Length: 115
Length: 115
Image (cartoon, rainbow over all chains, first blue to last red; front, side, top):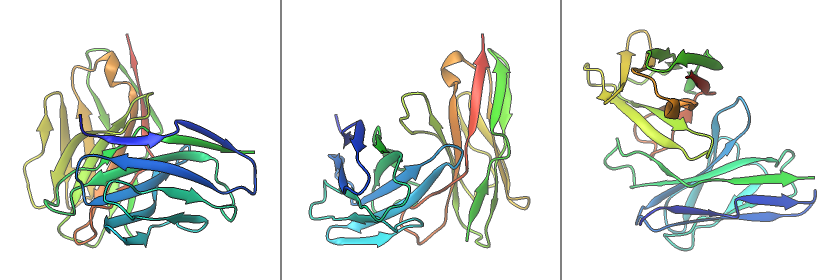
């Protein structure tokens, strides 16, 4: 079955360490997205990519980096510059903006805890 | 910037009864798309219903329907014949055209269903 796989489900890191969250999709979608979810704040966009080798910053990109070397993969690195990295991270994908009503498909998320 | 507001942090409903979740948004665009997503305890984001702003007819999906008031910038979700499985966080989301498929989310409403 097609879908989006995020791994691991839970991730623990010490403060000051970079950490990379994995996101893989086999839906043949062009566009991929990273969202952060904090309690009471809904989802906020970190980065998005509409095609391979291209990506743009979202609303809260500071302290994060991404790469899009393959269509299927969009890893997110949480760097030591991110001041409050503990959160739930959701990866999503969609057909590239067309049809415009196409929904996002989400992974199951990664819960990152930094101490 | 577009904003989406869900003014009800929590709602409860008796099983088999009807509940309405509120959502308002702010935009200067005339053409856009609105979505309701459900996030159960598994934290998987599931699309519930979508509405195109150019359509006057309110969208319906089985027990779920919306009341879309474009002039008032209001997009409420009505759940009829509530079931225990409807208990979840519900997020309203807005997508503006020519922006890939990026969504702006509201802060969410936690729906509890009482047996």
